[in-house]
Length: 126
Image 1 (cartoon, rainbow, N blue to C red):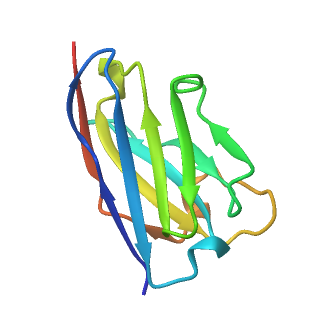
Image 2: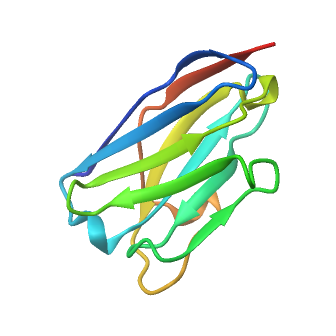
């Protein structure tokens, strides 16, 4: 069974930064593409960023391009999301997810991911 554990969420003022981490166990992490999603109150879960299994290819939602950076360390079985210039509209529960895809493919749909973490709350105050 795969376990994904997010950390790094919290309360930050607008314009500030946070770094989320997602620690994976139970599978060979480097075989999986990985992604971050978020869900704000009353809204559907949405794709934020994704990275292929080697880390050489990334995808971002338009709303976070230029502000967020996704990365991974396969030696540490860990996924990261560096979030800069945070805005109140970034407030949400952030989830990491993994899907078994090879090559350069970066899945962006929720149904493409096989395993999910429990989420970490990010709150950006104005």
